[in-house]
Length: 233
Image (tube, rainbow, N blue to C red; front, side, top):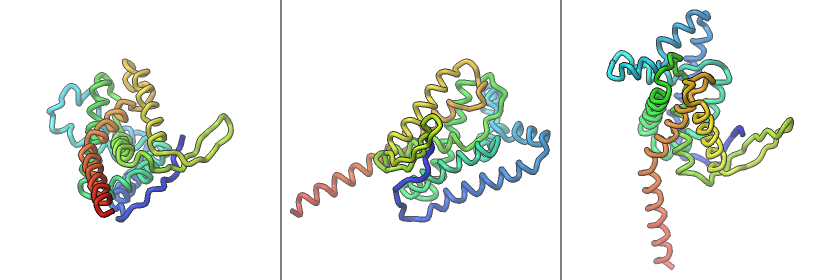
């Protein structure tokens, strides 16, 4: 299933989401200007290396790669898929959290994603690159805050594509189950598939955990409004 847009309006311009999309695109354009050898060197230098991080987790020289890896991508499909998910779901999460808290949340989820992948593929020297771990955190926040929001979704059925409005809880839930199943299936093989499944799982779990306070606050707020409504009647 491929989400196309959601029916969940925002109050404020999602400036951080826009800037994150722009930053990722700019970095990718820079990548396109490198030769193959230069690109490999770039990804190896600024991607997060699971083996190196597992062996030397307290080496401050490696810490910047946890951040820089979130802005590198391995190809057009990698970039466009990530930016589509970030744009559809990031604007509402930013609207709920506010710009600066959302940026800190995004980075924290990205860091948790790297930590999860490092923990489960510590022998891999394949650099982790991509915004998907941080975006997985955004999905975790969205599904907790807006599970009933409707998402226009492209559904491939054999050789036919259907378009339907589906609750976000189902769209994101299906995505997460897929990541979890693929991650479990790839245990022991590092990143042989080329996809850091456990980074997605770790980022999603971090997003859920970090959003719990906001979820409780929203529930308390709705409870107070219902109580006032009954009193006024």
